[in-house]
Length: 360
Ligand code: RAM
Image (cartoon, rainbow, N blue to C red; front, side, top):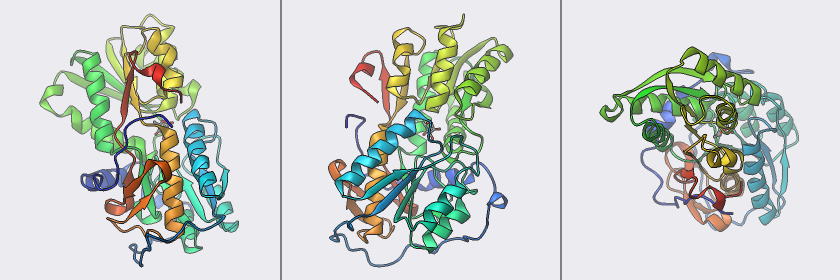
């Protein structure tokens, strides 16, 4: 696996509390809970046995936001690699659209099948909560990755990078690309996505800093992680704000669709675009001058780490308490931070100088 640098165990912990607090606020409210039966889970307790071997034949199911998103194809394949390494049974299930409640029936089915570990990226922090807690009560280890649910509804959250570092990175990139001056807009994924909303809130905070005084965030629109809708929303932004200086799209689906629109329009090279994209989807737009630089982490590493974390939890190596450590195969040792969060590492920036070194 080739990818961004990894933050190893021990250096993770701090700075996560505010991130979690923010993440928990995004999207829907508690009242949106689909089945409400789960209830909040107890604080993690119990003796961890760091030397316990990973249980044989663990069944590990990946449930992404949506199955037809190349980002999750790569992430889940990383999970599959890990599961194969520890001789578990891997499967991937999930909806074709990333709507708030679309994952609930999959969680219930996986629980009924007595799956050992569910690894999921939540489309909505609360819609999945009850079903996930039902799963936990039935003995399933529940790991969120990429997009968290409420921390009371899962055992661990594998975060790709701190929300703060992602927000700082995105605002710094757009500011550089528009010379620190002008109107910008955000093209997000779905309106309820925990990760997107945490990043957007923190991007707004970033923009309060004096160095960004010249930048005005004029709109946030949602492409729902659908290619066509994201394309149309980009078109709509440029109609509504003909003097727009730049767009930030912190979603792999959105930024690729926005790049495609810009590259075929009069705005190519005029309106800046950055965001979070996969090098393979963005390569042509970097080479044709539509996009100067964007960021991401290696989704395969994220899935790989999530699978190992789930296996470590299911096998009793960790119980979710801050400070516990486990080994994630070739990625090495990781430490659990506050509120059950484990951070993969800082995002990597891709531009014409390095994009061809990456293949995902
Ligand atoms: C999309 C999804 C995912 C996000 C990436 C950057 O694939 O919205 O949740 O982490 O973009």
